[in-house]
Length: 257
Image (cartoon, helix red, strand yellow):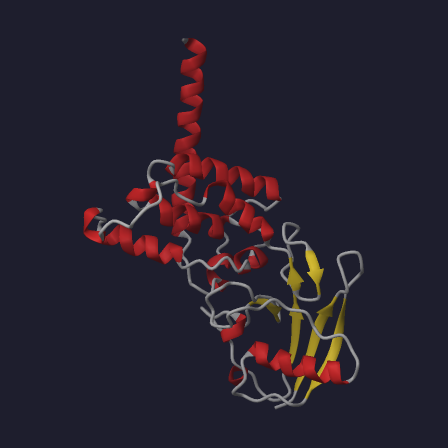
């Protein structure tokens, strides 16, 4: 199969980028998208050219490392699929594909299709955890969790932090990612002691990182490879509003005392 690839090439953040055209003639329908890029890079190296830089790790749709735009769609045309699990059988001979990195000010460019997503790490560090004493884990039956809550928590915990939601959002919002992290802890007993502080701290860090505001357009849910639902954003907003009013009430009572 033959493809025409237009790939964003950018040497470094200090350099201007541009689309570069490649004619790729050795594409098998059995390849994953990243394997196709591996073959392209082998050809470029053989010619003495710089290979295309792109993030990858497990290549099993678990780690969240890979990700870029394919014809304007985060992770490509297949719903519920990471780019590493996208196979070339979904394309046809002669297709023309445009590959670009995530576009968001909070995800600065590094090189070619690689962006710096460490903003997500800082959001997690601000509150996406529970503070418990270390030791042997308790038996699961010792902490009963309603089946509905357990299912919702597991659905939210499926987030791999790839950043597709930010790339697809017209506002470059991180609401789906942050909502998933807040929801999966806030639904479980272990996450209750820090539930409202978590919402306040993570929302503050989102603003610090320069992500946009959520306006419920829904593009994030449409491209999420783990198909996380917008409901996690609603849960995050409820926790944030309750925490904000509680904090204001406490401050008012302290002033009045």
